Length: 146
Image (cartoon, rainbow, N blue to C red):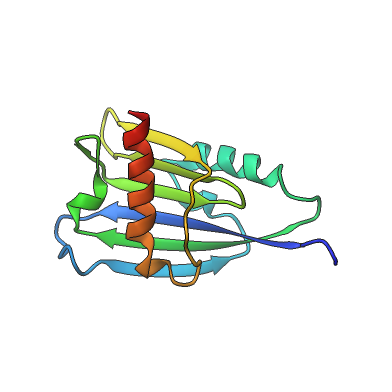
């Protein structure tokens, strides 16, 4: 059997908007051949570090593809972690590990960063129906660490 050449990474970007109805999020996704790092202004350093870590695990000459999901939601429950409301959530789902960051766009930003080999079940093409389960799994992991 030939070695695997193509690898896909899934990036979930969530933004809280209090003006949107909690049950009607705005959801879009794109497939990319290039890293979405340039559009991640507040989290670019973190994302580049995570990508370098994931790329180091892949065979030389591997071809990468990114599926980027952007979800703008008015559901505040999704953005509450450890008693704080965060503006944005970034989840990177790699080959073996998953990485996440909850952060804010304010003067003194508060962040929660983490990673782990979580038993996430998702499909890159249907994440719009599975993102709440992914976030619940991450929050359960954070509550066990605390």
